[in-house]
Amino acid sequence: MTRDGDVEGLAAARLWAASKFPYLATGLFGAQVSADPGSGTVSVDEGWRMRADPELTAGWSAAQLGSVLIHHVCHLLRVHGERAQGVGVRPDESPRWIRAADAEINDDLIPAGLDLPGQPVLPRDLGADDGLLAEQYFAGIRWAAMAGGGSGAGTETRSVSKGPGDAAGAWLDCGSGADGVPRPGQGQDGLPRWQADLLRRQVAQDVIAHGKRPGAVPAGLLRWAEEVLHPKVDWRAVLAAELRRAVAEVSGAVDYSYRRPSRRSSVTAPVVLPALRRPVPQVAVVCDTSGSMTDDLLAMVLAEVEGLLRALGLARQVRVLACDTAAGPAQRVSSARQVQLVGGGGTDMGTGIAAAAALRPRPGVTVVLTDGYTPWPGVPPKGMRVVVGLLGEQAPEAPSWARAVRVEP
Ligand SMILES: [Zn+2]
Image (cartoon, rainbow, N blue to C red):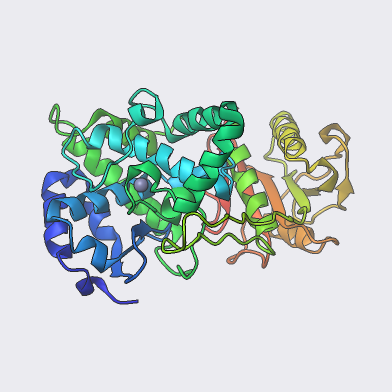
């Protein structure tokens, strides 16, 4: 792969984009762009790396390439990759999800001057109103596909084999930054998550600052910025999404492969979807039982976790550990009500995580429920995803290597 300079017209495209959408400039310049000859698309991954086929972009104006850059930055700002995993989008559905995500981006940026090549997806193409979220557009498409029955299945197979471009223009495989499904050869390095979060917050502040001038920023983007800076989250939904994502990552880590068919392969060839033989992950729940925790809150959240795991079909794989400075014995329980919360005193969730990691069979996912007043290990446990439920409004941050959800009663 080659660097920035090999994408002809990139500088002019960035200039166009930064002057047309100044409130997104920080994001625009935070993304790394490299040439990817023969890919037939311009895509982005969750590490803020864009890859562009120079042969494709050579035919575009500065406005068109600049618009594609802006469009992709918006996939990243709106964390479409994570959200796809959050709603449980299967790889064979990811072309549909990308259309839904595109509609969320395009509905107010196209009226604001975004000049995408091809036929970009708008909500009306999906039979929906403007101003909705990708999840809502996607639910509509999913429903329509199910209601479509037999003939619909054939159409879907074709659209999968063609890639997400579908009717929307052939360049449009927006990449793993749009659907969270890693593409072959995209590599691991890229912008670390914490830096991506900082960048997102910075852009949100820029959007709010520009938005003080009426009409300067599209309304949908202002709503996005407000939500980033002052999130009104439903912690149950976030916790469910995090758990589902962790479980999907663990069960997918072993033998789950999805190779996007080559754009050059015949579209009439039958499509073989990946065989989904997923190992069922073990789950551990580590409960902070130190004196600073209130039993009621912990019991409520534990019950919630139990319900979520049952919904994922994992209730039988769950073991619960009570932990203050030393982790208590693991209990295999069938109900949160059976957990004996021993403890009180100091806290070290590192001990609890180590105890979870020592269980056999080893859990692939560990949920830690804590008020956050605890030391944490400097590095994540090997081969285990950790989801932290931070209980109480004042809870300090969880370590950056863990996925944290703030639980507020
Ligand atoms: Zn897109």
